[in-house]
Image (cartoon, rainbow, N blue to C red; front, side, top):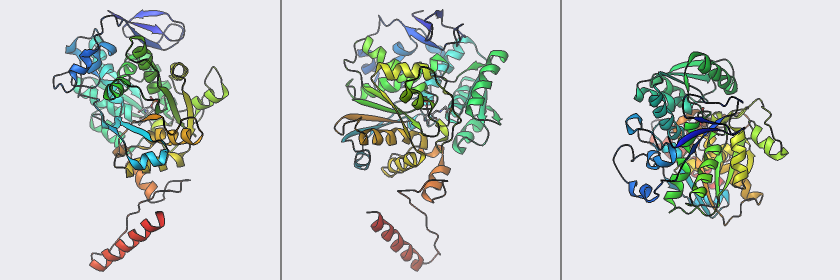
Length: 429
Ligand code: F0G
C-alpha cells in the first residue's frame, strides 16, 4: 500500500484500516506516496463516460485512494460541478472577478457526496456491514443514498426538529434508520462516536479521513477547470470544518507535487451564532472552546467542530483568514445568489456574505480573483427561503423580498397584482 494513516496531533503512523483515531486521541489523515502520479491522466479523463473516471472524484483517484480496487467503488457519479459568474453577484460582493463553484449540483444536492463515495467505497473494501453518522442533514442524506447503493445498513443521528425538511425527506426515503436526538448536532456527534466504537458501526462523519480525501477533489476540479491556475482566494462556509481541512490538504499536496506554484488563500466563514472557530482565530488561541450554537443556517449550526485542529493548519498554511457573518447577512446574500439564477441553501451563502465582508474590510482587494464555494442546493431548505421572502424569519428584515400575492380568478385582479409588482420594483430600484 502506498497510503498510510498519520495522526495529525502526534505524527504516529498506522496502516490504513478501521481505526479512525490515534491512541493519543488525535484525528488521523491519509498520507500518500505520490511518486507515480502522472498528471496528464486527469486531463485525459475529462469528458470520459467510463466508470469510475467520469466522476469528478475518481478522475483524481491517484490523489485520493490510489490502491483501491475499482470493484469496490460506489459512485453515482459525483462532482463535475459548474462555475458561475453574474453581474448581480459581482456588484453585491464588490469583487470584479468572482465565481461560484456550485457543489449543490452533486447527486444528493451537496458536497457531501464527494467524501461519501470514497468513504462508502472504503467501507466496502473493509467489509463493513453498518455505516453511521451524525448530521445536520446533508451528510445523512448523502450517506443514506450511498449506503442504499452499496447495499449496506445505515443509521443516522440527527438533532430533533433542527434539520431542513428536504434533507430529512431524502434520508428517510433512501432507507436510513433515523435516530432523532433530543439535543443538538454536537450531542449527536458525541453519541455516534461512542455508539460506533461500542457497536461496531463504520463511522462516516468527516472524522473519517477518507471523507476528507474525497472532499479534496473540490479543489482539484476547481483548479482543473481554471487550467490549473489558482485564484487569489477560495471562500468556504465553515461548520464542522471538514471542508476547510480538506481544502488545506488538497492545496498542500498540489504544491508538493508541483502542480501549483502559488497558494490561494483560504477564507473560512462561520455563522455569528455558531462561531467557535472564528473566536479561536481572532483570539489567537491554541484550543477550541465549544459554544451553544444558534443560526438560521441549520447546516452549520455546530458549536464543537471536530476538525478544528486540521482546519487551523489549513488556514495557517495558506495565509488564510476566518470570518463570521450574521444570519441577516447570510439570508440577504442567499437572496442575491438565488436571484442570480444560481440558488443555494442558507449555509452555502455564508461564503458569499463572507466574501462581501472581507472586501468591505479591505482584506480582499476588489480586483482579486475570488471563488466562493456553494455547498448545498436551494431545494434542501425551502422553508427558510419562503420565510425570508414573506418576512417570517425571526429577527431578519429581508432586503430583497419577493412576496407572492393572492388574487381572485379575474383579469382585473391580475392587473392589480401586476401594478403592485411594478410598484415594488420601482421602490427597490
Ligand atoms: N454547508 C453545508 C450545506 C453543509 O451541509 C455543511 C455541513 C457545511 C456547509 C459545513 O461544512 O462541516 O465541512 O465545515 N454539514 C454537515 C452535515 C455537518 O451533517 O451535513 P464543514
